Length: 355
Image (cartoon, rainbow, N blue to C red):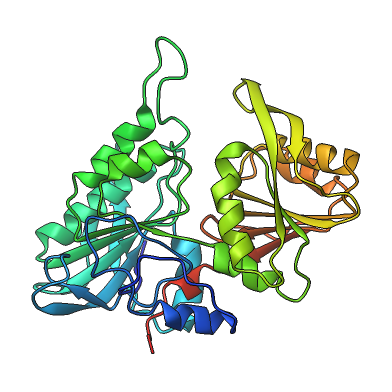
């Protein structure tokens, strides 16, 4: 297998609202992220990963990231990144007879700054693959490694749900933190506990500007959070839209894992178009319940947006059967063509040419 990618820089710690096009939003943040350590930065887009500091502290010599490496979990981003001028690094991956993995770098990266883009999927080998590739780049002389994780799995296991369980998600975050990558960059995390476990210098990208751009021609009248945990995300998205929509929040509880019940809607949706915003879609149970409650409360047009489209078995069919207009997701995970589902490319978040 062959893999690779290219990164951003930074200077603003606030989400800035832009009245111009999405490209304008990207350029606004062209110099706003990688030079600020020790702070979690919420921002609608990142300018470029090309310019980062040698020590990741906003001081000293600035290096250019010359190669971006992809693995099996992010290989679907390859063509999109190449179209945008990203330099893709090369390596081979093979297996011994007993299926033990072996890696061989096909690039000279000695003294150079590189990036690894890899997700942590449910299959445990994805985490091993990420750590092994990081080690491969480190032992072959990379001066700096920026680790970019489009999808970070296990974030829902951020604490023991009952006696006898463990916070596996925190363990995963701590393993990533211990790589001591020059920069650790993630996309729309599910859990505040995981964010803290990753360390104060983690940089979190947001897909909200992609969604704002996608609905700009026909903006919703109300942004709906499917549970209280999604309310801050809903408010941030509302601030990116014009005219400014209202925000409504659904009170939800889970009688057991992967089962959700929507009990109460805080906000007025009667006779209005709405957009439900969440960080991920797994079984779709939360959204099915949310749509039911919104229809009961008189919503006339319903769309859904979520950064990570997991779509466990039956989720697509279940959601496509709902009386909704469309579902917006990004390609942090591979997305085949499906009815009512529109996939947005996250590559613009990694703009290699800041202005």
